[in-house]
Length: 91
Image (cartoon, rainbow, N blue to C red; front, side, top):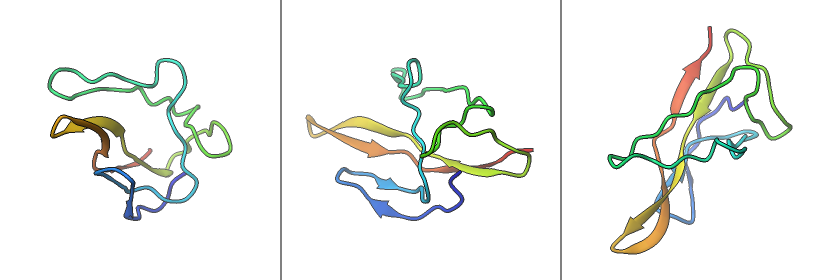
């Protein structure tokens, strides 16, 4: 459960806008390839949200922040970047 949104520079072009214990979507089928226009989707299962201590169940009123860290090329050189974070309060 990430309840804060700090601003942490990464060793890439992006910044991490998540704080607290951070969960990652890294299971089979969760690491995605974007479309030709840079879009991707991932179904969020409210009974299995990753956290630093294992899958969590989302309760009504819980607020989570989500952000994508992706590979990127700048000037033909490989690197990485991040999207803006989004805040979601579940009902």
